[in-house]
Length: 216
Image (cartoon, rainbow, N blue to C red; front, side, top):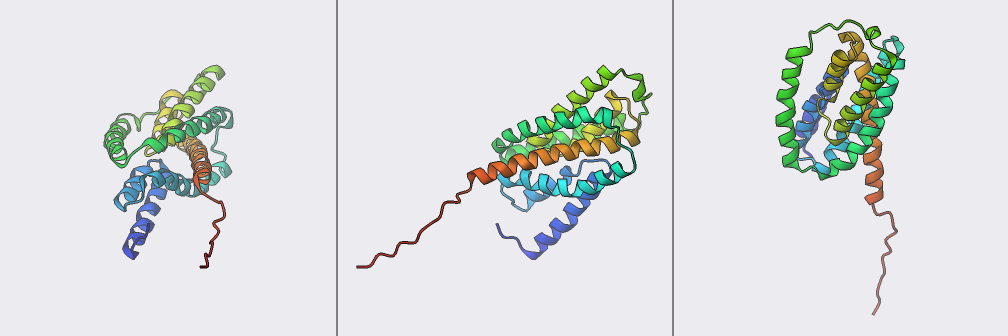
């Protein structure tokens, strides 16, 4: 597809803003996906494009969190592995989403996120140390797999869903949850992007096309 200059400018501004929001608390997909839809990007290319851009932008935030020592590796490792698997599975179903389905999902996801944020974002839990290692492994795996699966299928709001899951079910404070949600979200983005890329390559025709000149 071809776009006009103003459309490229709109993509630069809105996707840049989405990356900024994504690096802080997640939810950048709620800006980027509607942007692609409004600009007429083909449905089958929206989710893969969004994962590519999101993975690139999130890389810097993840690096910063790792460098600052904010990642609870013994906890988040379960969620990362589960998110890689769940996102790849989810991405395999994403090709069945039509443009109308994407709009419908956005209409459901946006109010749900606002409700959950308003109700739980300010809560301060006790401490993750209050949980046993078995509870941590089980809860982190469930959160990573199911939210990662959602990210592979659709994606907008994944970071916020992970943030809330880590606060509510893994007893993290807001700062811990924000850092660890970023790296799990990054893993699910990369997994979905790789799956979409492999699928795209498989559907492309690389066979040489010979031009045959017929002389009478």
